[in-house]
Image 1 (cartoon, rainbow, N blue to C red):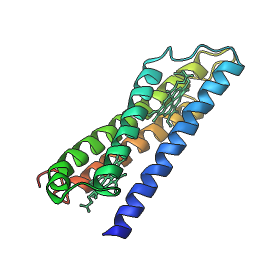
Image 2: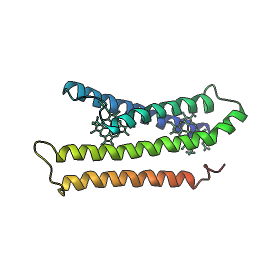
Image 3: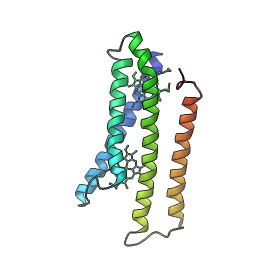
Length: 150
Ligand code: HEM
Ligand code: HEM
């Protein structure tokens, strides 16, 4: 169980850190190229989602790992942890889809516009479809373990 927890919290820490690095890179790129920050729905949702993800990680760490809550608190919190964890995860997947759409729309409307039915458009859209299908399979595999109903 401890090993499972360590893998779970470690992988989520890696995801959180990579998310923060990714967002910082966009801010750096925007600032260096004089592009305004935080003008899109994607960026607004993105900030909200990364903050929720951080809160979810800290709550999980404090309650289930260190210092760790009482047995009762852990049992009461687990269903909330699972539901909020899935919610934040699905929101991140949805926001990634918005990001793909936004990027492709920029490229289709740039000075050298990408063709609407060109191979790049298919590549970006299919990558987004695969990302969403991946999210669906993660949700189904968590639901199939009965974690939502316990
Ligand atoms: C593969 C998936 C993703 C793609 C293709 C993508 C694409 C983009 C693009 C093109 C921008 C610049 C335009 C803008 O500011 O709206 C951007 C900005 C941003 N993205 Fe994403 N994104 C992805 C995933 C995410 C996720 C999952 C989050 C957070 C949970 C996120 C958070 C942000 C934030 C906060 C900004 C704003 C930075 C600023 O205003 O300077 N993105 N993204
Ligand atoms: C943003 C970070 C996190 C998210 C999105 C998240 C999400 C989830 C989800 C969806 C589940 C149910 C599915 C499963 O068992 O794999 C779960 C279970 C669990 N999580 Fe997290 N979690 C996060 C961070 C943490 C942290 C830091 C801890 C600290 C140890 C933790 C402890 C647990 C425990 C003990 C379970 C129950 C595992 C089981 O019953 O086998 N989580 N989490």
